[in-house]
Length: 213
Image 1 (spheres, rainbow, N blue to C red):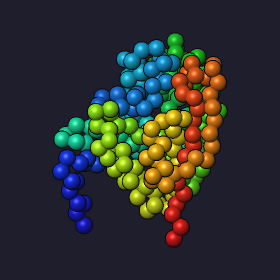
Image 2: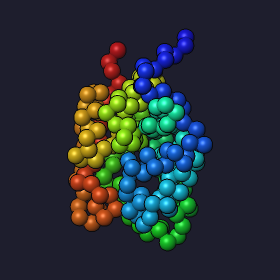
Image 3: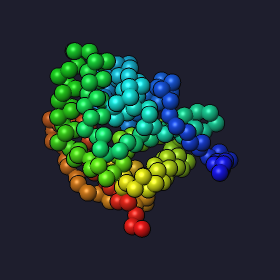
């Protein structure tokens, strides 16, 4: 059956492609600005994110990505993968970041990874994990994030999986997630030294279980 056309002015959703890396990287960086902090400059951060996006086995890999377009412009990105891959993809992300950024950033990357290890619980194999949901400022409040998440939730339901994600404390997106049925499972605050690498008050793990049959 043909997929219905989007409402006029609404987003068109499509699978991500490796060639989208230059357009998608700034959106991902906006969602995870700590990459720029530890790599010292925006150019290095964008180059590293592009490399992770193109690589097949990272938390940012295009093969797990869904894009939203508005009038031909990429207006949102979501990346979600099965929780059973969480450990291997996390390791792959670290390897690609280190290789792309170079040895002078190795210490900062290791420290950032240790902070994330403490803040973010492991993801269960019964969940689909959303590693990125990003919409640029000028496209927000247009239903783009909702459209991306609803497509992810539908896919998770078909696979018989719940959905898990992490968001910063105080992040406005929490309201959207709660409207979609997500609930806070854990809350972990950052300390002063950790905020040098992850500039947030803390992180929330939110989960939406698979709806009962």
